[in-house]
Image 1 (tube, rainbow, N blue to C red):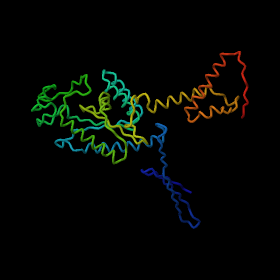
Image 2: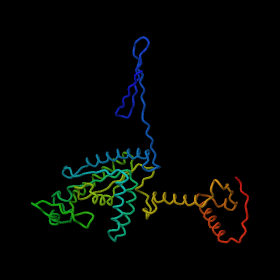
Image 3: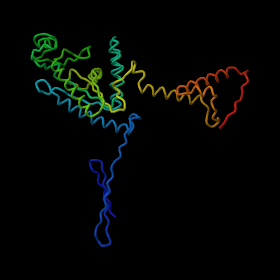
Image 4: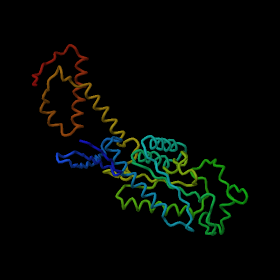
Length: 326
């Protein structure tokens, strides 16, 4: 019997078996197998979680398409986009946001940068949209939107000019955005963000626009030609990670809670009895009545541990042996 295997681009695997019948003719048998894709969000960056994140990445690409086709002033291209994807990359962005939170003595900005740095870690992917005409190519319609002045001279007078054109090679600034910027171009990036979020709504993925992520991304070189960048984290989780956020979220986020629970479980294992030398002891009725949840059980175990330590400090007290049941 001769066996051949063909792998199609869609992931299907086809096996063809060829054999010779007694009458001299050839017989073929074909088997088609489909891949199994398991998806679950519980274990971060596990194979099943990465399958889910790949679905989000497809949605992020479609959101970028929607942003690039949004209506712009004059119909000229001016939006560039970049997608951040990966644990190391998102962690680097979150740490940059935490660094920026302490650069200025501003309570609101500090709270925003610290809280939204957690969202940068929890996102499946982050889209960065930037406008590369806002800083050096104003619309020149004398709208007065950037300053209220009757002409665009307000912007040109505050920029370095070379050959009568705005020169942005000097990027030194102590501000998050090296302005002033053309308000028409800034409005155009708003159209791009709105189109991307509309596509996210149609694709049933969670997304939200953040200035803080865009400011940190500019420092890391994302959308390097743009004078203003906005970040849009995208996620497909059972709970939207970008809303219903409590104060001091960077201290009580999911990752922090998981670390604390692991610490408590390890602590309780160390102070508890060993399964090879001890038997299971029934709790007294008064303790049984108190235990209604896991935290109640933790309190009871903590009190037992303190009583045990007090008993060790008083060696003269006779210890009453209680009956143990296996």
